[in-house]
Length: 460
Image (cartoon, rainbow, N blue to C red; front, side):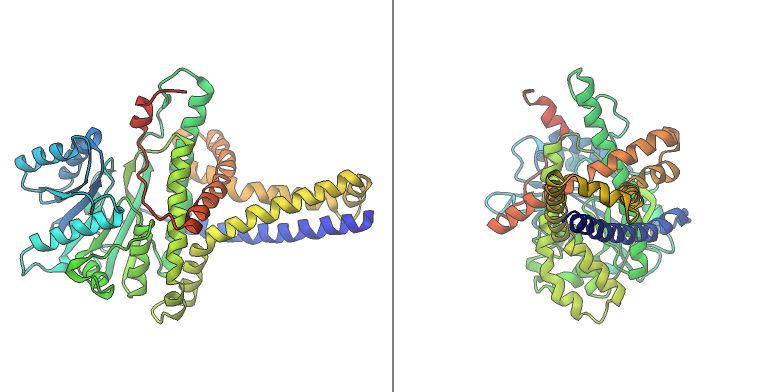
């Protein structure tokens, strides 16, 4: 019986070790393009017509500054702000700005049509933009960007994405830029003096910055090989000709728009562009700063929405598998991306259950653990398992130092890498929450509360 228990443990750890090694190899494939990435030369933004859509709901506190920043990007940039039935003074701020600047446009949505999701809000602005443009406007020269209400683009953003390998190439239909956390260096995010709670809050923000500047760019850069670069909700740019094509393919025409109704409308748009044969691109040469979330509840709600959106997008799998415009590697990459929530659910049940069963077994038969460790290379297997389990996630810390935050120092970034290996377990909670909403048919889009709103709320 002891020998049997040792055999079971050896087999279970060998399988886990194999899976860990495969994942480490996958991470190595992702890391290589990130390490090799180099800045490109900017282009001429004056060769294109620029429009930016900004969905807003109760954003009075930030929208005025956002408008000023966006209008400073380019003299001829038009900013279309969608007020999604705000109850504060958002509409008044936008109206005042629009009265003083003909390049600022207010698009108002009212109940009961309003508050039906970000995709619906963007489609409303898309229709307003199409109606406003002159009939002889060349849609392939019109680029439509999307920014959050607190988004701050990097300097020279439009010139950079006009480069020859981006919108300077007529075959490129969409470009996604890097996302950074604007409050990553804030030392005291919470309005009280508790050192530990502030440490946890700013670490949570730093984890998001590390994720968006290393892991996500690594995935996006690797997708250039499979031609499946995805779009994000903040800092995405798409040619109007491609948006019109998607709207027509979806039989939505002038009555709808290119954005779908899933909770992951940004990824869904990129997926539809890829399925239609359009080329998408990603660049780290410019970025958009957004607010990192320091509250775990905020983060869980946001990531659960993203996970549920991926579950909703699984309806595209038959089209993906049947597509002649996707390579085999492209089909595999998209399939893996859409299956990730379900794989996380599977792993969060199977691996802990296995650990519990083995722990119970060895509590009842403690001598079996000694047999396992003393024979068959048990110590080496256990060490290799622990190393692979940690290294595959901790590696993003040193990469963060090397590619993004040299001033922070290698040892601090290594510590952040260790913290990141714990941070990713939050995804399991998010996915279970998403699965519960998905099973109950709760598909409503819930706005993530801003940090300022939480600061003003009563503290527990």
